[in-house]
Image (tube, rainbow, N blue to C red; front, side, top):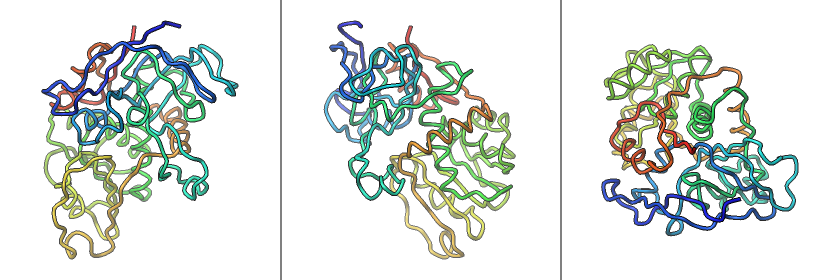
Length: 335
């Protein structure tokens, strides 16, 4: 095990043009009780990482390393860990730990645990050569996926899966997707596989083309061509909440999937909410969400559109994400 590990840290949150990420060298961490030391093989770049770097999501501690879509190789296990041999490939996701005792945890709603901890926010994340994670919050990854393909499944995929469930899409229903980045391009494929008519709203011509390639009935910058049974807002733009609600048919549900959202304009009750339209947030995920989605991904084999960056270019990857230059998902890879 190397004495030092390379990592990126958020030194001073601010606009990505101010270079809030800084490379550092620090001692390689050692796993404690119940923990695993992973050598990072790939890490997806999520919009939440951008929110952390730019300060939309205030860092919990200074100098935190982002990254929560981690594919890693087990280097060492701490006391009390069994059944995870050295050399195994595992995934670490956004949810890094919960108390296991509160009423939310006991009810199977651990995503709402008041003491929940998150990879790349409360603990150092995967923009690094090595990380330490709680073994009970890691995932076995489907066979046949490369590291780069598997990484986005661990947040983009899991959160999209939960958002789709929260949107209560009926069988064969009409789904609107607002924004078409990493999570949306996986979620759309799940919905298409369920027999849904998927309508994508995005300003990006490249994203529109990808949406149609992946089975969307329509993709454009304007209103969907028919009323929607359900909608998911992936773009972090609160101005789209009334737009999406207005596109819903009677009894429709809008799920807002981001951890950060700009201000929502005033809603008109008659136009946006009457006739039992519903708006719901999506907060993190449970481990059961993760296991269920990974099983579904293994069955359906959705296409993952990846743009690869070497780990040493994490700052460039975030810059490209901020500028809208990535179609699909960016993934950092290590040698």
